[in-house]
Image (tube, rainbow, N blue to C red; front, side, top):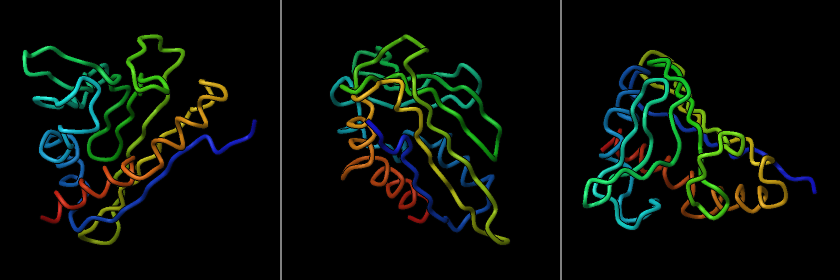
Length: 156
């Protein structure tokens, strides 16, 4: 089966790369929807620790951590690379051989704007199920909605 193995979304925000990166990472809990887009029901908080092997996931009401993956690289303020360790059913899979990657880049676009590109790739590790997974993250409510929430946070 042949299918597109990436999901890519690009937006421009009216802040410099340093600020765009900070708002994406350091204020992750401020823009990520905790009532949806989580794996353990309604999350109390979401975490994104911008350091290699940093945590990426959610905290439940009892303080338990539910990982979505881990941070592979954090090159402030230009790039963030995340291991997505959720399977096609959006359940955590600790097998690093089955992870996909989410890369977010922050590039200056003029003097006071930043082009932010989010690319989710590597779905082929899941074989035919990878196509459905890619379609899911690319559908209504997927990465485009999340990127739009980030833009609203930056501009709000």
